[in-house]
Image 1: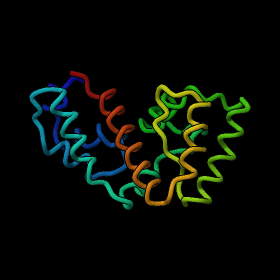
Image 2: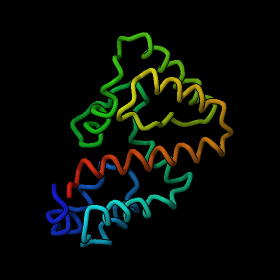
Image 3: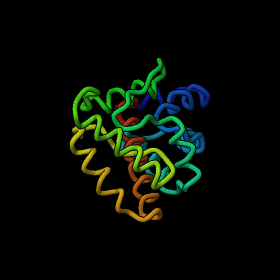
Image 4: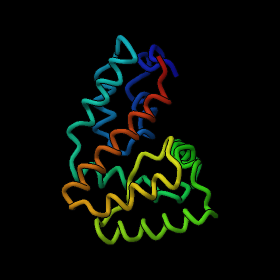
Length: 164
């Protein structure tokens, strides 16, 4: 969809369009409320600003919709489709996939949530290395890193959905 079409949507339809970007309704509400956008750059800047204030509760809410790294999301929804495309570099039968599964479990035991990393453009080996690096983070550092990864994922999805 292009920016002009997005600007012309009803608020309800615009919210529905943005929902697969991230499971944080307040973010979508803020982005929709800022319409009309004069440029794609203005839309992305507004979306970034709306994501800057995310806290632990927002992360928990958003992670309810994220599969583990290396596990393909099932289902017909747009969020599942995004996830499958983003994790296309992970072959479920490869040795790295088994290491990711083990790393995911270690991460969940340490931090109590799913490991989140921007998968788009990264190989399974790169994501595994990042997972191992982040296991050394403190809980506070890891929360901030997870929020940053969530912002990156959200903006990448928005850029796919709405073109200039």
